[in-house]
Amino acid sequence: MKSAEKYLCEIREMAYNSSKGWMVTVESVFEEDYDDIQFRNTLASINYKDILQDFESGKLDHFIKENSGDKRLDLLISKLAYSLMEDIKDCTQNKYSDKWNNTYLSFIPYNDCTAFCSNVDDFLEPLDGYIICINQGIYYCLNLISKAFVVETVSEDLKQYKNNAPELYNDAIGLFLEPKKEAIKNLFFEPEKLQPQNYGHLSAFQSSMAMMIMQFIGLHEFGHIVNDDLTEVTHYKSHLGAITGHEATEGDYDHKKTWALEYSADEFAIKALSSRAACNEAAWANFLSIYYFFKWLDDVETKIKKPISRFHPPPMDRANNLLRIMKQTSEMPQDAERVINNISMWSDTWLVQNKDCYE
Ligand SMILES: [Zn+2]
Image 1 (cartoon, rainbow, N blue to C red):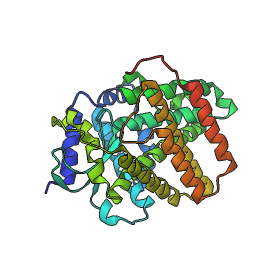
Image 2: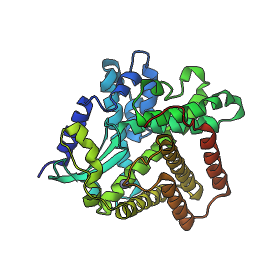
Image 3: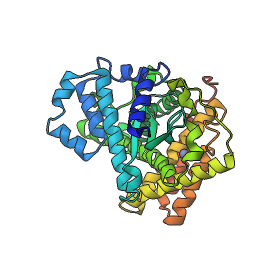
């Protein structure tokens, strides 16, 4: 039987060598003026204990000095995948160890799909485990929309940043549809333009929000694995054909069936995330980040005037389904209603409609 770990390396390699993926972002994020401090901050922002320890003990100093460009991105992305897998284990409280012991997760620079999971290769040969692939581009999109959220909610003394929110939000939409260098330029806060305490505070807020949404995406995929959905969701990865050279067919699909599986994987993910929250308010704060993410996906669809994926229910239906689950399991704080209204209001004013055509 084919090794899942090896297969994941193979498609990753192929994606890196494909001109269609997100490789453009490697050059743009890590060009000359992308300095060490910024790289260190990005790495630190992944916010996982082991990484911070390596970091603070100076273990990474040599690496940072000796390497640049794609090697650095590789490290960043592999640490991110590792940390996400740890989060998934943690959120599922060591249940399903038989599943996650055989699950391999990677951020891959392919082009058009957010994430998928599988237990077969692209010729439908069975693997000895499970793979979860997340589009590398989503890491950038999530950081951009999180930054937009953060700057919109900053206090009065930082209000000059508020003007950037619509641009960041629309950059993220553009980036989702097509890898573009310009959109990446404003990905992170610039330490030299802010007071140290503000820089730390805003960056931490931004990265924890982006990571929260990323955890939801990882847990959603893991939910498909736990729920045994793989026979049905295998054809999602037909887009990989462009990378592997194997023309996969989309096959027949029953949207009622796949939509039910999607709702159920969403439910698995939000419940797993909530189980780790320290209190009710924290669980709702996590949920609001996810709600905001779906609102953004809804705006991507508005812009392209068609669904992102036929296999998935409309983004706002998914958001409202999650809201229903949250209300069933815990009391909704008053503040949450206000944030939901704000998110709709922002998106109405931020979305630049009909400005570009992405058909
Ligand atoms: Zn799914």
